Figure 1 (cartoon, rainbow, N blue to C red):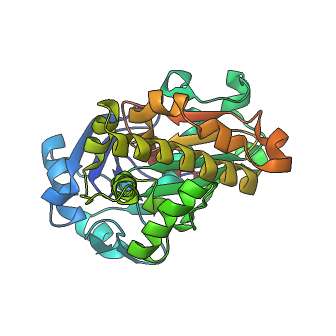
Figure 2 (figure 1 turned 45 degrees about the horizontal axis):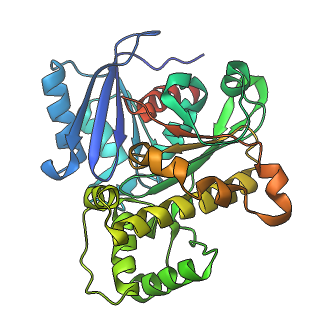
Length: 327
């Protein structure tokens, strides 16, 4: 029996934004959802205290935080932001009876079966009934590009429960599938040494790809903001169009690799903030071709559905709530 008390503070902490929500009692909906720029707060605790002040000043009894970082032991130091903290000291400082800190994509994985159909945009594969999708009997795969690249999955377990995976698959080596992509990776290797999937499949990754496109045509390259790359592609800029095209193709390759690795016949979910913005481009791109293009195992991948998560509220907050119940 779960004895975690209420009210509960929930958080989804990324490299750019920290999102918080409130859960007042059992069975209640998430409320008071707010987002804060990480760069505007010196510490995670400072951001939490601002939220609690604006929320009304009530102290939570328990808290679950999904954070864009590995969580291994008491000390947490973010990969894509300067925040660092002790879980024990944060719990004591906030006066919490319980604090659960987990990887943000582990939290998001916990939320997958509860996502409503209207918040999922399908990219190929067979159609699943609501029962098949919300009560899967096969593994689910999850990846998503934002400030970094998150990767996780959800494995069915006994008693109708699910086991979320905690890993750092975004830092696995990025594959190339043709000569053009070989040339892109060669440039990125010169810049970074090891070229992880995150070096292309993230906000900074979009900037890296546009930079590489300019370099490949012999131009002096500048680093564009991710939004400028997307807007430039839609305005007809050739370097930005190449960048978005490569992004979609690389995403398909990495998603297909993940589906094979996990045997994710329950589907592949694509989270993060970039894919919902690129839905038209993803539908018109080589994403699905690359997802299925795994030689002899194309028939295994062809029926697997992929969905872009397009939710108005971060679903990792729901996953954080589930973590307090299940972990």
